[in-house]
Length: 316
Ligand SMILES: [Zn+2]
Image: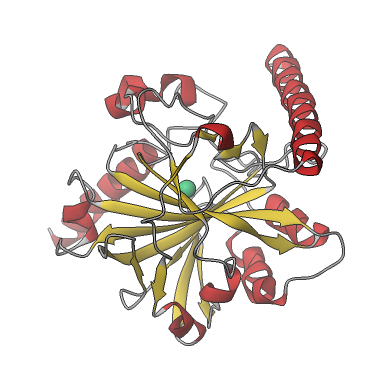
């Protein structure tokens, strides 16, 4: 009897995993265009990610620096690291906390990454800045400490906070804070695989500048797309070498046994929301031209990606 119960629960677990993994970004029945059919919130009006349009961002001088508490303790301890079929996710200890500008404390749960890599250097951040997609994006997910656990907070209207940071490429400059994390990716090639990473310099894996950030109210960027996330997107970015980015982009497989590429959601309409920034954007002609050129580059890449997808569909 006990065996039967075990067998049934194993089957149920397998079934749940199957249902959970059904959604995809661009392939199959439940691609991001269709998420809202199964997860109604994904069709809501406060969705993430968004394009951060600097011209329209409101400067709010009351936005004090973000406080990352206990993040440096991440150096010691063991961290489970999993390939969940959509990204690599690292479980974080509750001792890591983020205090927002209003003093609200948020407890860290996990961090994960979004990247591109589908074809010739496609970028894969979720948020874009003035229409420009960055190379990668880091998300550190937290829940509001006024709730007892993540499970309770995940459904509460003010339940979650995500600290986001962009990754940029700096050719040959290896970022040694990422070395251990990247070398562990080989242990979790297949979805469902986990490994332990001992010692993780989370604080050093993020940009040093915690006082310049964008903030707005949005959602989870994956199903169920719950609209209860206070976003804090750091203005500054982390630098990784080309080889490091390549490793992250090409180490993991999806449930379909394909290389896990382009794990990011398209930007969502802002509707009546206002994005605030803790800093004033200084507009020099130089940066203006730079972002204009980057914008063009990005459009070309997106176009190439769309063509590639169409070609693939035709092949199928
Ligand atoms: Zn994310």
